[in-house]
Length: 130
Image (tube, rainbow, N blue to C red; front, top):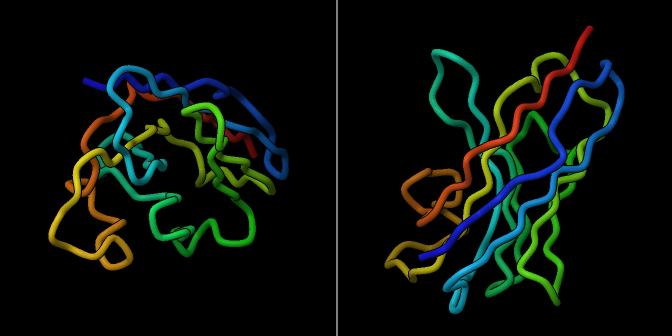
């Protein structure tokens, strides 16, 4: 069992920045990737960003490329999401995710599917005001 806890959400004005942090605990080994999804009311969860240290890849949805950066602390089981130039459309609950089981699919081709991830955090609200 793995527990993911997100920190860092809040209210920010458009153009501002926030950094989300996710701490993983429990049976985190082995694990292969961590990342972030987000969800707004009435919509499906949307992939935001992920890092796969097994293959050394970083992945972003198109709408956040150039504005968001994801990385993992190599010592702690912690993943970060630096969000710059925030827009009102970035408003959502942000969920941390982790992959602990290898699958038959290539992560580089499946990272945006929610089924690719084994555990989810409870989420943290990010609100961007215009």
